[in-house]
Each structure stands twice: as structure tokens, then as C-alpha cells.
Amino acid sequence: MLLPKGGLDWKAARAQLPPTRALWTLVTRTRFILLVMVAGLLLLLWRGVSSSASEMQSFYCWGPSKPPIDMSQNEYARWHAHTQTPVVFNHHAPLKVDSTTIQHVDLNTIKSTRKAVVNGERVLILTPLKDAAPYLSKYFELLAELTYPHHLIDLAFLVSDSKDDTLAVLSSELDRIQKRPDQIPFRSAMVVEKDFGFQLSQNVEERHSFEAQGPRRKTMGKARNYLLSAAMKPEHSWVYWRDVDIVDSPVKILEDFIAHDRDILVPNIWFHRYKDGKDIEGRFDYNSWVESDKGRKLADSLDKDIVLAEGYKQYDTGRTYMAKMGDWRDNKDEEIELDGIGGVNILVKADVHRSGINFPCYAFENQAETEGFAKMAKRAGYQVFGLPNYVVWHIDTEEKGGNK
Image 1 (tube, rainbow, N blue to C red):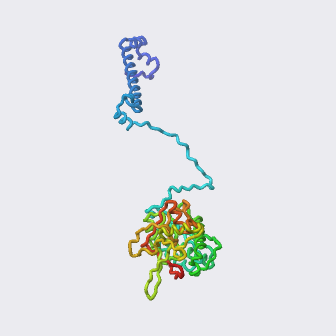
Image 2: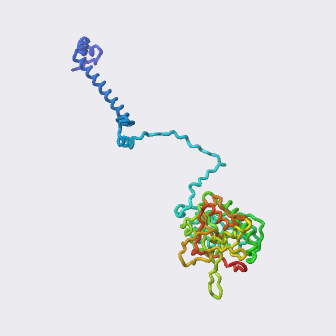
Image 3: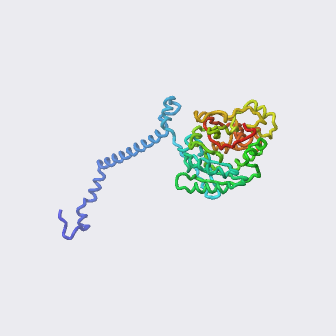
């Protein structure tokens, strides 16, 4: 169809439309009305079916297809095995504490296990010192050789009632070893000073005389407790007590002891003495022992404030001494259960100390310091063991008199 030259105007368009009456006739025809009605009915049916399916699906998700009372036990079990109703709790928002004066310590994460190195468990080495200047060079020489990772080891020392240059020598040795550029420096070091007013000559005969043992052991117990309370931190899993006058010990002693997984463990303490060109392997520490009936009866007969001292003829306890047992050539992992222990070398699980098991500076069951510590630990249900064939070598004190 050709458009007029002047374009499309309203009159021309109106002329092309069917007449109004023709449109009305079309709309009012029965056939058209039926078509509209059928289309509307189909639309209503589709919407109804869609809505019912949605409601049925919701019902199926949240409940069984039959009442629970009509279900068998197997049907009930099958239904609840895969259609548990989800529950969402509205938890409180976490409490955030920003105060710098409040510290959180979680001791649940601190474990003492056989896999100490793998787990990165921290070890605290504690050494009480008194007039110890001559021994410190050898002490640090042996300490530097320990194979347990040094970045997991903290050192702590207590210097008390010293008349020699212990503090200066200790400080110099620590400064030297901590400045090394290799893997020898330790994670940290602490020096504690505390005098107890206990003066006793370092003369061997006087220091190890029977009369000195009670007061000496009580003061040493006090010194150990002061050092422990100042140095042990929540991060420590193990506490290793090591005397300054050790002259030889295995470099893997920490790993060896940790592998036993005992609450408290001590080695045998011997010494070398050369006479006529021959090495006399002397037995040093009589404080590691197994209790006897004779010892129990003796303790029952004594005043509760008397401290028994081992290795002296004044008190015959009849106890079995680990020092008289074992041989360093035999199986080093052989264990025996002990009732008393010496303090030259002790590995303790840190939780034992945290539980309040310390070194009595008084007579506890007629024992003090390390022997009282063992008694206290056993009373609390902890394991106290010794290794008769695992030998740590002490200096030869050339003790005289009543010592066995």
C-alpha cells in the first residue's frame, strides 16, 4: 500500500481501521467469548496445580507421609535417619576484652607427651647455685651439647648466700652463650637472687656431715621452691632440675627421659675416681631409694620434725639404694619405682609442680627437699621412677666419714 505524499495523518489512519460496530460484533461473538473463558480456566487450573505442588513439597520436607502413630518402627527409623529438623541457635556475640591489664592463660593446651619435640613442648631447666663459680664453665659446656632444640629451652638460676664470684661468672657465661650466632643460644635465661641466711662451709666434710643434713636440706628445698615459683611459666611442659656439678651426661638425656613419659624420673648418679691408673666407678647419690619396712618403723618412732638423711650410720633405714644397683653398660631404659629421689638430675612434668607438689622446706613424713618431694608426689598419686642403668656422672667429692 502506498502512503500519501503528505505522510500518514489521523484521518487517513482512521479510515484504515474497521468500523466500531464491526469490532463490537467480533467481541460479542459466542466463539470469542468461549475462547476467552477456556483460556481463563486453564490459567486458574495451572496456578492451582502449581500452588498445591509447592505445599505438598513443603509438607514432605518437614514431616512423614503418614502420622507417626501409623508408622512401623522401621518406617519411623528410616524417616528420622534423613529428615532431622534443622535447628539454628542464635548465639550471643563474643565478648571482646580490650583491657591491657587482663591476661588470658589456657593451660588446657599445655601437654607433656612423648612427642615433645614434634609438638614443640617447652622445657625449663632449673639450677640452684651457691659458691658454684668453679663448676659453671663445665656446666655450660654440657648444656650447649644438649640435642633437644634450644629454642624450646628456657634457663633459670637461683644464686643464694654465695661468697665467691658465682653471679659474675654465671652472667658472663650466659652472655657469651646467648650471643652465639649458631643454634646454641637458648630461648631465654633468668637469674634470680635470693639469700636465705644459711651459711655452711663448702668444705666437703662439713657440708656432707650428718649434723648439717637437716638444716641444709630444708634450705635447699626453700631455694628450689623460690626458683620454681619465679621461673615457671604457663608455656612450660617439662621442668628439668640439673645440678651445676655434673661432669658428664648423655647429650640426648632430655629426649631419652621424655620418651619414658613418667611424671618424675631420675637417673643413677655415679662418679669417676682414678686410683693407680684405674677408674673406680663410685656410687654417689643415696637419696634415690626404695622404702623398707625397717625404714617405715624407724620413721614411726621418730619425732615428726626430724629429717632422715640417707647414707649415714646414725639412722639405719634398711632401704634399697638405686646407687648400688645397675650398670651403665646394660639396658638404659630399665625402670624401677622409687620412694625417694636425689636432686642432681630430675625431669618432672610441669603439671606435677602446678598441682602443688614442691620441695618441702620442713619435715614431710620425716623427709625434706627432693626426698620429701618424692614422698609428696606419691601421696598425690604421681609416678616416681628411676633408671638404674642410665648414669649421669657427678664430680668426685671425695667424701669422708659416715657416708656409705
